[in-house]
Length: 145
Image 1 (cartoon, helix red, strand yellow):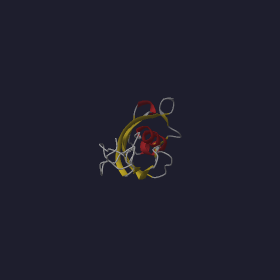
Image 2 (tube, rainbow, N blue to C red):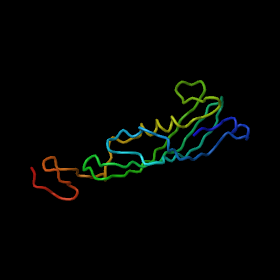
Image 3 (cartoon, one colour):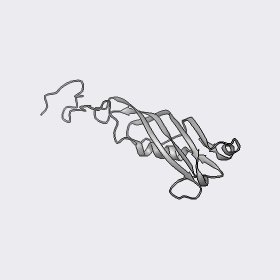
Image 4 (tube, rainbow, N blue to C red):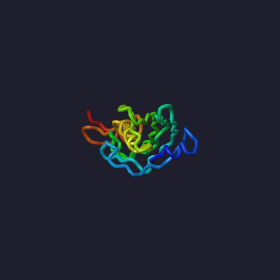
């Protein structure tokens, strides 16, 4: 999503609420046997502050779907990730403003990658598989020692 700051200024505004579905992503999920369900939903607010710096905050919502890391059953997890970032033409620590446009794509990708969980579980107390016989310990018990 690209926001044109010239159009915002022409309209006499310094703030903008935004929402978009982001579907043009690849390789954001680092978990094996797992994928992000399309679309990623992005809600937020943009504010132009002094000196041309732009501040954006909001949240990113997406679903992870794949195999549970413990028992290998299907698992789905809803992720709700807040973000708060700065865009600036001159600050090397901020995301870039190019041609008076703020492109939120890299920021969304970065936030999703950083907030990706280490594992996907079907439920928080998943017992997993028996390391000896392979039975799903959520569904049955085994006599292995």
